[in-house]
Image 1 (tube, rainbow, N blue to C red):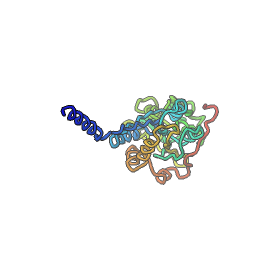
Image 2 (image 1 turned 60 degrees about the vertical axis):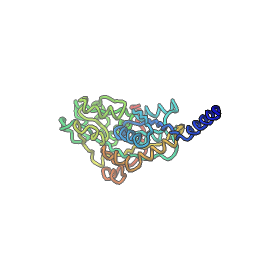
Image 3 (image 1 turned 180 degrees about the vertical axis):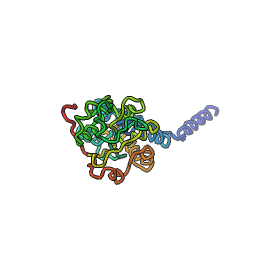
Image 4 (image 1 turned 90 degrees about the horizontal axis):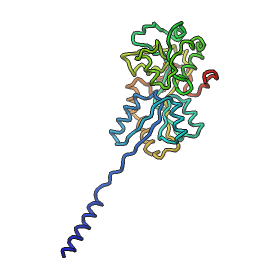
Length: 278
């Protein structure tokens, strides 16, 4: 009888263990992103983890550098470059699933230190002798590519080129040149002004000077092993909470609103970098 009771208790114990709910491990999503979206993406990744338990690993850098990481390693679940130019490149390499989404829009502008000590009022001032103009590397960074396009469109490329310094490797590094006191102005995104408003301010360009509006696209990487989780995070980014966070960081999320600032500009597309800049 003792043996029978012990055996029965053992069986009941095993059954009890089977009835304990199994907690599925949280998904881990890896994102390769151009740093044009860094502040809102960091906030949204933290919010998403708090709400779902799913960790989002963010890798930031130049959009071209992030693209090369995906090509070389086949790793990652989402690609979020800083402009449609690099999305198109990734699509040509067949690295992405169809169905890319737009997270926010970007407008080229001039960023200066708070108070604008060099008294820069527009694009032509960037050719002033002795002025230090910061810009990102146009080969691998979205805002650098747009900077070259902007200067060429306004016939200022060769005039401003002697003043260019830095040629840094990401949007984040380009934006940081102002608070670090490295330059008098940066050819950047309008949105840089909201990253560090205590140290910088934005000089908007005239609408007719802007040839093209950029946007931040996001797409699932074709080789992702977590496509469902990646798709869920992408829907979170494009949903109301995602739009609210981008707006809080000074980004425009509605196409109608961005077109008011540059009604004649094209939206999206690609700009072929001139050969002497490659």
